[in-house]
Image 1 (tube, helix red, strand yellow):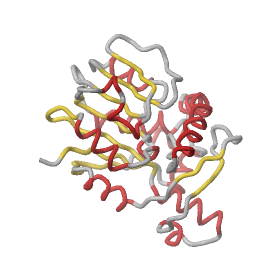
Image 2 (image 1 turned 60 degrees about the vertical axis):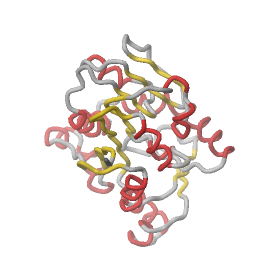
Image 3 (image 1 turned 90 degrees about the vertical axis):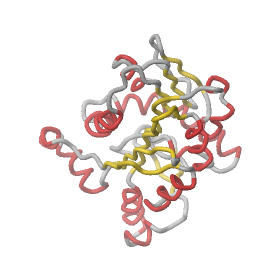
Length: 256
């Protein structure tokens, strides 16, 4: 990946889970360095939009599933969030502050993470991590059970049209052919070109159907774009957004 946020890895068998966990452990520090860059789309576009949708987090408990080094969760604690937990397959964590626990674990097995047993949260985040799940519906159902009253899930994924554009350019095919293709997609990422990642393609309807099957309804969605000042300062980022669109953010609540 060259310019967007965290990547989605396609995972199926136990051996692939181990391989992808190892790959992410090797990539984690590279990703965090890329995210910290001044022209990172995560800094310029994604995290500001996600933060707006989270609203006031004062006295709210937050679970960040696939938290990376925990940096975003630390910001939320500084903004008043309490009793927060960050979970990631890598343990490349920053030093946690008071009111925050950072736990190594697999988001595909949320129900088996002892540190989450019996816990509920006001906000549960899947910020570009949802694609790591071996069973997306099962993962969302587990998260749904951990929502406190009036809580919601904030979930972001890369715009699937981006991958269709990349595959069409690579294969000399059309956008429609690649958007609806079910073939796995392997590529070198932009954080560390020594590691090849694979992902399972998906469409927007795939995502909506997974939310519905997990007992969730879509309260709102966003497709954040660069603010005007960032467009002027970083025209190469705007060119990337014009070509690949960016991310989708969904605010999900449990069905009655």
